Length: 443
Image 1 (cartoon, rainbow, N blue to C red):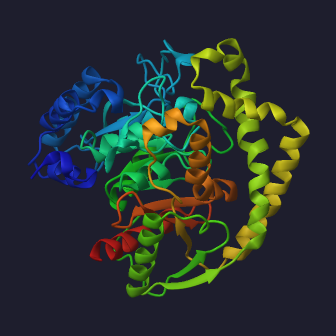
Image 2 (cartoon, rainbow, N blue to C red; image 1 turned 180 degrees about the vertical axis):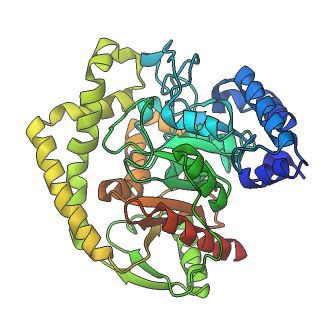
């Protein structure tokens, strides 16, 4: 069996059974990264000394029957906004070149205590502010389904490290879709956790009230195990998960507009398979959701500009202009705009909670588009803007409503289906996802 194609859970079980040595597994990943033609476009920097030391410790624990968890000894990657002690952490931006933290981010500490092996840091969009994954300042990882196209952002390298077999799983972040878009475009499972569920200590911020930590994986089981490792708790129980009788709201307001052919086909086929597996799907319009989109600017760009204004103004030429301009757009909003937007959002979240009560999840296409061509994005700023907004539209709705969210592959390349569940309902969402994954793969 090819170790590099196994899920993280499968690798962990093989380690536990004594059939895989964590040291050999880590060396296989490091060798693959070094040999892969896209390795330098996916990894900003590897951490081979740390990886080998952690793998050796994992191997010793396995021999002694003292494994710390089901992923002890499994090698994973980390987006380059997670502080890593003694390793440059730049969040994909030259504004932070040479920034070397003294300590690991809290979630990296938790994962290390569970025995996971850190392979290194993956490329991303500058300061995590784009859904496309284009970063001419550092590198733009290629999509696994079309290497001339972008991989989705901002966790572009996270997704491609897993999709190209250069990590068993990856840790990304999601402020407006940055886990789910690259996961969907590279046919992976992506989990957006509820804001506040996992620690942001030691995570370079974009908009801290919306920033979330999340895994990108080959399976829902992996996402559940990664969630446990990142939080230092127990994994959700996925045993016996079923779609029978589950009530799913198919949201039709906004999110179905302007769908390209492949996302529409993938979503339609996925809905049919969920229904065939026993799910009850009800189509609903929520026209008041239109009120959400005008307040995204002051909430996202306003907070991002407040966080990064001084650094950007000190060296604006270090940034890719379309990303810099997205930040600078936040200067148009006042403190009053920000406060009033939050007041409005609190009202909309209350309406959302009432509207979705009684449903197990809301389903919608993850993205309206598929990965755009990287060269065209670079050459055409207007194309960059329109594609970025369409890429993020559906995912950002989840961040605005404060939900937990999961995207799964549909079988149509680079076309994911997304599930919204209530805040802090990750365990129930992952159980639903386990059953949905089985139904979708059966098709």
